Length: 121
Image (cartoon, rainbow, N blue to C red; front, side, top):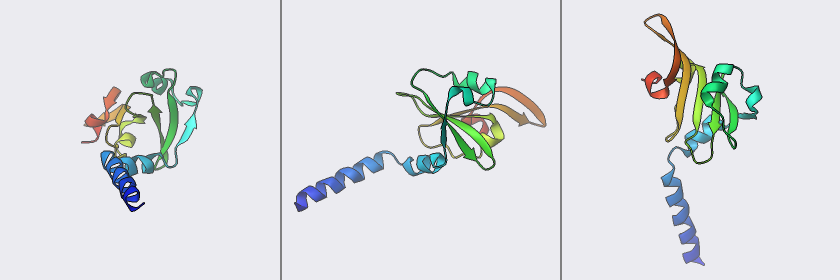
């Protein structure tokens, strides 16, 4: 009985150490709300998210703003925001990706699709 309990503890510890960003993911998604593709608030975000059958979409509050989280089977979770400033407020969990559509560089507003790596520096 004691050996079985120790085995369960060892397996649980090994599993939790394989996903060090799990608490970060839980904190990020704690107040998320599942939505339908029609609920995505701009056409530009709908296009960049390029939804597929099986995708699940959430709105995730970030301060007073909302970003989208797309969960796709067999793919990394992905966050989308219109403003790169808002996306930069998020600490991306390990293995997650992020994209935004508008950023300001040297006082100039740029539009396009920018990766989290570009805006979180």
